[in-house]
Image (cartoon, rainbow, N blue to C red; front, side, top):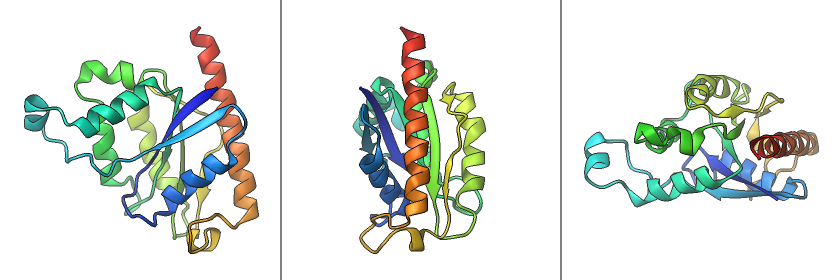
Amino acid sequence: MATIVGISGALRRGSYNAALLRTAIELSPPGLVIEIASIRDIPLYDGDVEAQNFPDAVRNLKDRVATADGLLLATPEYNNSIPGVMKNAIDWLSRPAKEIARVFGGKPTALMGATPGQGGTILSQAAWLPILRTLGTALWPGPRVYVPDAARVFDSDGRMVDEAVRARLTKFLSGFHDFVERAAKSRS
């Protein structure tokens, strides 16, 4: 059984990326558990706060990511790049620097994203690649999921209603699950 932590990079309660993660849970193959983690309570990074009292929300998320078999990031695209709140959370998780290997080192990681626009988060996902490489994650080389025109793909309750996108997501999850399993076997 592989456990993956899924993080949405949007704080909005009706976020398409949160809906994408919920759909991923629904479509995940047998043997794969996706646990959604929130970044809502992560404060803005401040070295003084880190030095005085490391925030519990950061410590808890960091431990969840460190003990998971994989990491699934559902990233919005803001102004043709990554969302600041998500980058802030990842910055916190990399502190102190001596913890990077424990949290991210060799961690199988995949990207997906949904947006109301036509780009399908392709620019955001591309912008994440050097950051995730710097942190030492094992980026899944399989196809990523880009969901453009999300208002058409999800209904008003956040359920994915587009069967073609559901099929792509199912294939994506199966491939990522296999990647996570292979990584676990190579570590043992």
